Amino acid sequence: MRKHLLIGISAFVLGAGTMAYVNQAAHATGGPANAKTYHMLELFADVLDTVDKQYVTPVDDKKLIESALDGMLTSLDPHSGYLAPDAFADMQDQTRGEYGGLGIEITSEDGVIKVVSPIDGGPAGRAGVQPGDYITAVNGQSILGLSVNDAVKHMRGEPGEAVTITIAREKTDAFDVKLIREIIRPKSVVARMEGDYGYVRLSGFNEKATDEVAAAIKDLKAKNPTMKGLIFDLRNNPGGLLDQAVGVSDLFLEGGEVVSQRGRDPRDIERYNARPGDVTGGLPIVVLVNSGTASAAEIVSGALQDHHRAAIVGITSFGKGSVQTVIPLRNGEDGALKLTTARYFTPSGRSIQKTGIEPDLEVASSREQAEAIANRSFQFSEASFSNALSADEGKTRVGAHTPAEAPPEGFDVKKDFQLQRGLDVLKYGSVAATPKLPVVQPTAKVAEIVGQKGPKAITPPSIDKKIRK
Image (cartoon, rainbow, N blue to C red):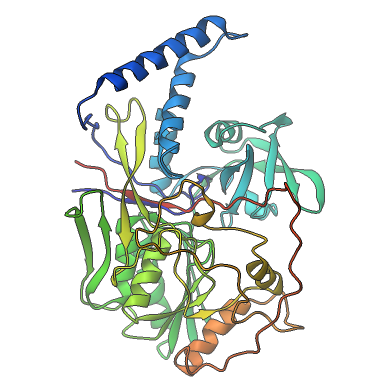
């Protein structure tokens, strides 16, 4: 039986992680090596020997080889890579939904460590660290140019110890934030009532996601027997485990396909189906999504949209539609490979790779976001990666356009406009019946500065295949 992992944003998590892993050693397979392959392997050995003997300072051969392995795999696509033994162990801890750290998810952008998101209730979140912040130093030592794994080694430590990170934020001078490392026990589900409607937010798909979502909905219904509908918030959810994506979708469906994954061989198709039983009892559902909704979260959104079980409200999701298999090497003693092995497809046969899930009602969260979407001044999607897989359908992501809706002039910025419009859809019974707001015309396009690079998109969570037993 395989264990699948969906990694939403291809980033390293220092708080709540979403990774799956395999418990057996991987076996070398593939076609026969030819003369050219042997020649290139000899070339690699020659280069390693030359560096070892002639580099200006002594080198660590093990580190060089691990970097070479990772470079080989990351050249394939943004989500493949090599996990050294310590990184593989960290991934296993993250999958279990409990581990030590600062409570932030990070990635690397042009050699700088960037915050994807702080974990709700974690040390970084409580201290005011924000998505998009850059971490330039740890305890006064620069981490510029380090890989994500190396940066993590500087930030992790014993729970209870203090660590100071230096933050660079747009329009603000660099500043220090002192944090105390904690054992992170991320609460992936938050539930409450919004008037007559239930609200459930799922922040990630760890091993507890399905059970926690089911428990939250049952508790809401028990305490509010007249509940009229449900808002299911998957915004900024980077993904996680494939079996949990299937399980969460299954909570709301009475049957039918949830998702399929297809590998290199056209005959290699694996399908996942829902079982009878809807935990809501058929209540209307609205799913909130945005550009940070990725991987496992997109599987759930796509399944509910294709089955006409929920209306999707927000902006187009990230577009992470590939599956990664985590393959341990010598039972993990030599780390593991994270290798893209398939694409996933929604029940109607859509590949959302690079394109994302387009909402039924497009709603920007702010006027600034509406302007960014219209001007393409900020890219936050799988399509931003030059070596990302294609959608396998020839489809392309929607280009610059004016969003259908954005907060009107004078809207209280402290309120959640997307949530408000989701509640309106529940109130009126459908997207079609919901009164539409006047389109907010964005300001004039921002002029491009020749030679200036725009912000790089964050990699979405990968869908990782189950490991073979």
